[in-house]
Structures are given as structure tokens and as C-alpha cells.
Amino acid sequence: MSERTFSIIKPDAVAAGNAGNIIQMITNAGLTYKAMKLLHMSQAQAEGFYAVHKERPFYGELVEFMTSGPVVVGVLEGDNAIARYRDLMGPTNSTEAPKGTIRGEYGSDIQNNAVHGSDAPETAKQEVNYFFTKEEFID
Image (cartoon, rainbow, N blue to C red; front, side, top):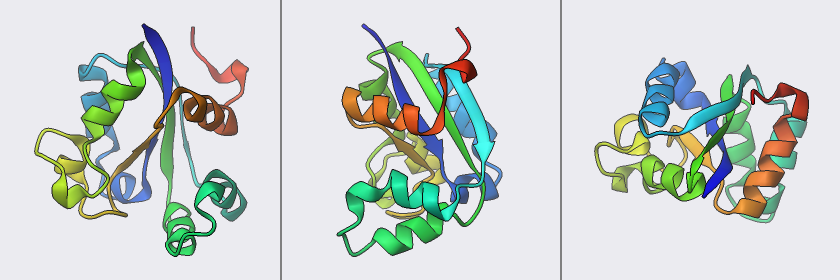
């Protein structure tokens, strides 16, 4: 079943020059970009996007990290895109991520883990709509 999911290539991966390699891994896995843009997340954008974590102790550090440099946000499409992208990303903690996954190749720890991906269809829709308008999609 074809579905869409949301992806962020995080500041650590962009700063290290790995965005292109990560995009290549994503497309090689059979997922198609329907929208993509490079942006520098504002404080307000990061706080809003990660509001679900507001009460957690790492929230401030996460917002600071996500606003520390440019990110690549994207909308991916494909059969079972959410599950497939999550498998491709690997575990959140990059030190536990196997080689061949994005985090295993380009992440260094639990925060500097190169990428973010939606965890469910509802989340994917919210995250996509947070950063993209319908006019920005390629169909």
C-alpha cells in the first residue's frame, strides 16, 4: 500500500556533508521524494515541531540542536513507506544501529543520529503539513 512519510536529515548530517549520501540511500531503498527543501529551522519551528517532548528533560537540548544548522526536510512516498523508512534509519541510538542503516553509517549517538522519520500515519500527516503546503508537492 502506497503511503507518505516525513523525513528530516538533521544538522549533524548536513554539516558533515552527508545529505546527498542519505538521499541516495533513501532513493535506492525504493522511496520517492514528493517534496524536499533545505531550511534552517527557527526556534519557534523547532519548539512547535517537538512540542510533544516539551516536558522531557532533553527538550531544550533537542531544540538547540535542531536549530544549530540547516536541515533537509522531505516527503517520501512508497509501499509501506513509514515502516520501510524506519527500518532504513535504524535504531534511534546510532551506537546501536547496524551498518547499512542511515544511523549506522552517519549517526554518532542518540541525538546526532542523522535523520528523523515519522512513526505512524497520523504523525506523518501532521509532520508533512507542518513544513509543506500542497503546492510544494511533485505529483
